Image (cartoon, rainbow, N blue to C red; front, side, top):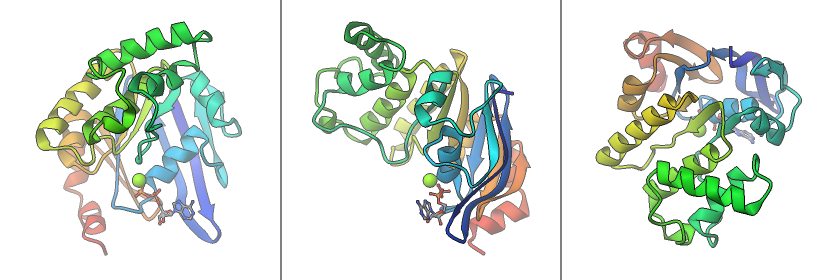
Length: 235
Ligand code: ADP
Ligand code: MG
């Protein structure tokens, strides 16, 4: 098991944004995590990465209990993520933004930049490395977010709505990109509202609603589950 979250609860005051969630991901999997807005998906990612401490429960990654490790230590073990709201340094170049991720593994700026160039090429941003990040549109930003994560040379990549705001053609290109990343041996957990993305990428899906798991199975199984349909209809 590459990622093993057990009985994870994250409370904000009396409100449980994630309530007793147990999710495990095997090496080489693409797991889809879906659920209506506010279901707790981003909060759960934050618990996996250490961006938020859990209220209770445990998280292990690559065989190590990381529950109390800070995000940098988990990243060093090979856990990378993208943020729903891209974490872009606007005035810095595309290359420098990607270099930030590479500095986790490479201690000279020269090596880190070489790694950053390599991942920018892989995500299709090889032609805009010197442009300021602010000049990128939504698809470019989403790709830069993925590049920054890949530059840290992860074993697992958590994608939080990395395709939101893209046109259908851009979504299809992004699906291809995720397939290539997976083909390079990276385990993927993908949060995405666009069902086509989940159906075409995920082998297994877990559905959250109000912080709790309400269903799991293949994309076909969960999307025809009455509990899931009801959750999406907002009852
Ligand atoms: P999702 O990503 O599934 O849309 P989130 O994990 O962002 O859901 O949010 C789950 C719930 O937790 C929402 O009701 C949200 O308002 C709440 N929440 C998220 N972060 C915080 C926070 N830092 N403080 C208080 N409530 C939060
Ligand atoms: Mg979210």
